[in-house]
Image (tube, rainbow, N blue to C red; front, side):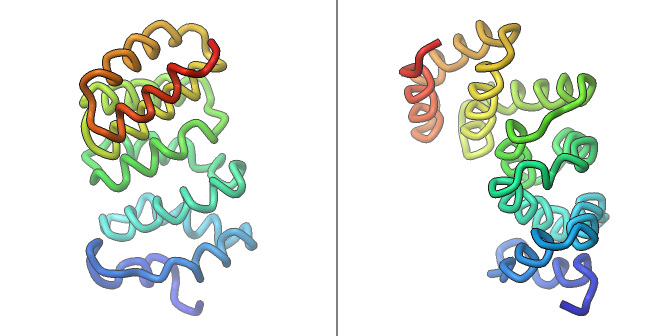
Length: 171
C-alpha cells in the first residue's frame, strides 16, 4: 500500500464497504505500519478514527500486545464523543490490554457507563469486558455481578445473552 493509512482510511463514509484486509495484514506484520495505524486513532477525520479502531481491534484479537502502546489513545477516544462503532471496538479490546492504573480506572468508568445503558452493541461488549475484568479484579466483582443480574432480566437480546453466559460461569 503506497498511500499513508490516514489517506486510505478516509475514502468514503462509514456506511461504505471497506477492504481492511490489506491494512490488517501489513500492520500485523510491520511495527512501523502498526504505529502508523495507531496514529490514525488521533486523526481529526471520524471515518479514519473509526476504521483504524476497528482494524486495530481485529489485530488485537490475534495479538493482544499489538494495542498495548495505544492504551492512552483508546481511553481518550472512548471518553470523547466517539461514534458507537469506536466505543464498541474499544470495549472489545479493553480486556486484552494491560492497562496502567490511571488508564485502567478511566476505561472501567467508560465501560460501566456504557454497560448501564443496557442496549445496543456497545453495552453488550462493555458488559462482556467488565465480566472479563472482574475475573481478575475482585474490587469490581460485586458491582459487575449485580449489573449482570440486572442485564439478564432487562437488557437487549445481546446483553441478556452475555449476562446469562457470565452468570453461569463459576465465581
